[in-house]
Image (cartoon, helix red, strand yellow):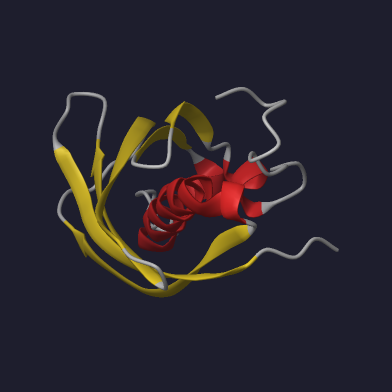
Amino acid sequence: MTETDPRMLSTTDTLIDHLGIQMLEVSGTRVVATMPVEARTHQPMGLLHGGASVALAETVASLGAHLSVADQGLTAVGLEINANHLRGVRSGLVTATATAIHQGRSTQVWQIDIVDGQGRAVCTSRCTLAIIPATRS
């Protein structure tokens, strides 16, 4: 998948851009991305903010779901997300891997696992997305 692929969405000046999220692998069934753990993703105690982990999780799930339906003039938006924060991280990169669990006509469910630089579990999340008509502003 290239940035010139019409199914890809611009991330310029978005939360994705602000948090430094970088896509490594993207498809309609699996997405892998990294995010730096640094001041912009820390909570006041110097650890990775749980909200930043959730933003990363929803980003990879939403992109994967979007890619799976974009050719049909559809897109995906988050309906529900949950997360279990398993380990604190103070620095480095975290990597999120999202895999599709269910890809129906009107909803999708994705599993997202976030690990630290040593491959240790940091957060596990599940995201449900609604499939809706795509509109561009």
